[in-house]
Image 1 (tube, helix red, strand yellow):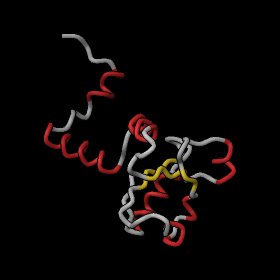
Image 2 (cartoon, rainbow, N blue to C red; image 1 turned 30 degrees about the vertical axis):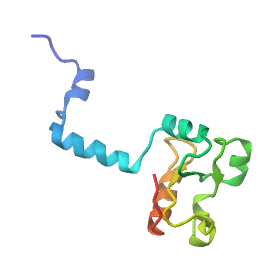
Image 3 (spheres, rainbow, N blue to C red; image 1 turned 90 degrees about the vertical axis):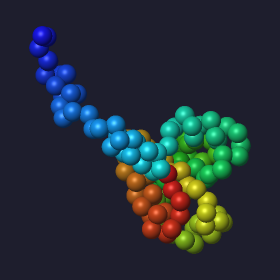
Length: 118
């Protein structure tokens, strides 16, 4: 029987969750998150069915952003700044990348205001 390397052990331990638990977990994730490619494809239609919210500072947004994205820094997410959008508007938020928690902060603010968010 072959020896399991330390690198493989990091993947294999702890063991995978039972399929029923994995199903619940990953279905739950997709209620909160979406895929960059899917957002890109939806934005390309011109009618994505959501507002893509760039939550970075205006000067950073000005240097480059996803076409069609609206800039609203997460610190400025208050009801007054959302009045142009009906209450059931889905917001998809993004920031600078995986190292940036600005999108998480924005999502928290939107959720606290009762707004749908991914």
